[in-house]
Length: 309
Image (cartoon, rainbow, N blue to C red; front, side, top):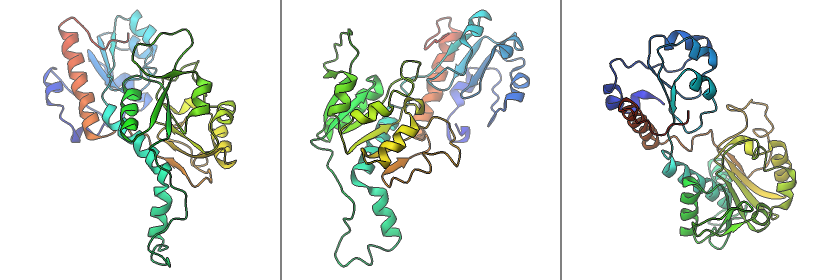
């Protein structure tokens, strides 16, 4: 979170003692939670043994949307309330999604590399146009996941002149006015497929070999949601075979990735990978702090909000 960049004054002011740690290794958790009624955490795995070691604990504030790192059954057993934060990163993640789409559509990274390597200076004409560039206007964007983030990306895409399709589930009635299609139809008709859904047992590796085979030849995959939604070996094969023209990823299955991971070593020139940074604008991170403050104040008043356990 880089606390020195953010304003914690109001959040700290709601407590009698406010202590921060830059990072907490697993073997330091028990010591650091002793005597505290409220604990703020993010990626730290908070397990049943930690609840048992902290009898004074009353509230966990998760500084993220995902709460799979907290044993919520243990929280319930120990009477501990767990609250998360949502909708904090919509502007940041949606603009990052469009940035990835624009980068793969324009091959901006390859052109930038050529400029730095001096190829433009050596060009016999006024420009370089060695790599294909496409317009977003007139193309179709398929959204898998249509919560706040998916809707924000859809609005931005429409501003670029794109047609937006949204995946729907069979037997579910939708009243948001979106054009809902089946998973297969979305894959078959979309020039760009962008993932914004949750990772669970039903969605894990939903973008697999079969899914990539169904996508339009020369289409693109964008993922700013969860790395586990994608079979990474199948993605590399789809890129290297030419089935996909490119991909833009801000998330991978294992983070940080191993230096020898296949994705990092994929040779496709139009694969853009950013380091899970889509959410990390200063404004988004400050919204996390502000929402945690609201969660804490609501808990103190006896009416918890954003409660997940």
